[in-house]
Amino acid sequence: MADNQRTNNLVKEVRRTPEGTVVALTGDVDLHHSPALHAALVEVAGERPRRMILNLADVPYIDSSGVGTFVEVFRRVSAYKGKMVFCGLSSRVKSVFEITKLDKFFIICDTEEQALKA
Amino acid sequence: MSDTSRIELNITSNARSLPVVRSAVERMARLEGFGDADAHALVLAIDEALANVIEHGYGGAADQPIGIVLASVRSTDGRLGIEVSVRDQGRQVDPDSIVGRDLGEVRPGGLGVHIIRSVMDEVEYRQGEGGGMLLRMVKYVGSGGSTTDRPTTLSGS
Image 1 (cartoon, rainbow over the protein chains, first blue to last red):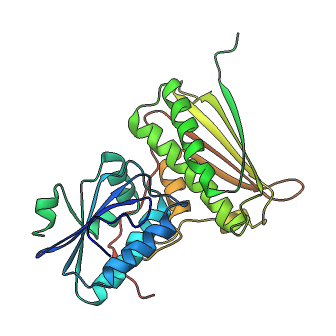
Image 2: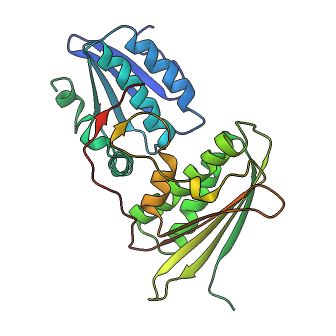
């Protein structure tokens, strides 16, 4: 996958750095978009980055299908001892992580810079 | 003149309809005086309810009917609220079997019902007359459901 390539409606950018691969998303992560997002993230995970950074700064909404997608990709990243780190969560997106208790499980940073060092 | 609002939405079971419903629900919640957190909670619960109907009630079929009714209500202590009814003609299940799962296991799936019960004040599933399911739920301003605090671990697939 080429850098900055738009792989589906939600993936705005894929940027590789020495610290890890940043995947910037945009739009609502819901039942309609989650299957395509899952496929895109699985492709990134297949490159086995040491960190997969999910920048959600442009994601205004997420539902349980989106959360489930992240959990499933997290399993793949954890399987090769990589890290999956989130950043840029809005209060609404963060509340869904809290309701599902995933805020206690995932690594969540305020900024992308922090995420690349997490 | 009544000071209550009532909105009816009839959609097909296509996930592409969900953003439209979310926008309508958000707008009504704001007009009824809901703040950002309460409006989001209501939107999320309805979205999860519709996703469950699409995925489980209709098995992913995108052309089946779903009726949504939103009506403004007041609690016994005078708080503003919105009552929501979601009616489908899909698979019937025992209402007592519709429960959220244990969040101690981190795994995909099964979170929708947990979210609904966490953010709504009243949740009631019933089998509909003539088939399908009826979900009635209420959200009041300045309230929230409760979730259990348990240690979270990664479960096997």
